[in-house]
Image (cartoon, rainbow, N blue to C red; front, side):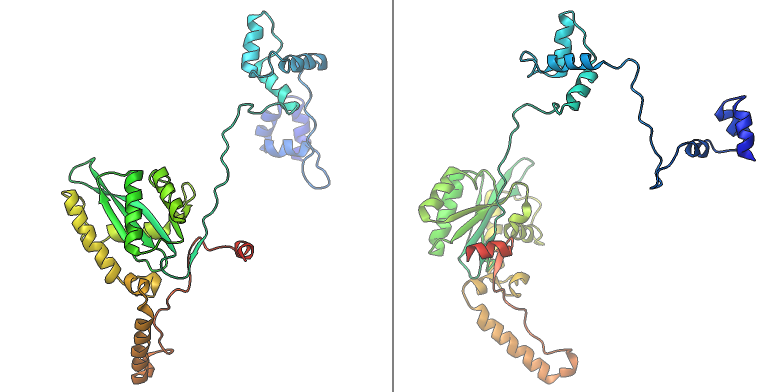
Length: 336
């Protein structure tokens, strides 16, 4: 009934007013006017070309002008302005873009900087002295704007710190001397030394030193902090130490604190990543003996009170392998 009344009323007034008088939804009215395909979606009628559109001949002229050798390297805006200065108007700038887009000619023609893909570092150590990771962190000095640089090397398998240095600045020469001194103290260089892409880490003095020693250099990918997890974790342990100060009064005070902390870290800190052994114990090979003693103590406790355990207790296991980015199956297959 409403549809019949709407038909009569629509001839006398607008569709908007007829819908308002009869209480009919305009959206429903217009939707019902559009035919639907078999799939159920409304069939859209092709949009009629505007009456002021360019003719095919005019479009061809615009395209030929834009691709002419005098304009081929210029943007449509520059072409439009140049032609206008010469007393010629072909079309608007947006129409030029539409014509170029229709022929697949709209793109950035400037030379773009391209960077080669960075290799994902995949390092594996199954014993101490194989892979070292190093980094530098800032320590706040006595006043704002004054910092000391703390260089730290860590063995990723044992978590042992064979060398550290607190210096007033960060340079490639200092880094070279620091790494060389640490290798001398350790007695032998590692197979790989890993670091991020800081200026000292990628400096020429460090690169030449490691090349002379036959040590493989490895670097994190840009902006990927997870590629250097062991150094980052060691710095977090340092700075979350309850006695770590907000500021150091002098570089001597910073060195004294680091000496005490890293001695504690190596010889007293029970590290969860190495079965709650100390880094020195794992690094120097006494962890297996301690592991056996722990097992005997737990066995004795289980024998005395088996009802207190759901299963025979075992000490936390020592790692068999430690890695930075666990190698994929494809990488392992290639290496074998």
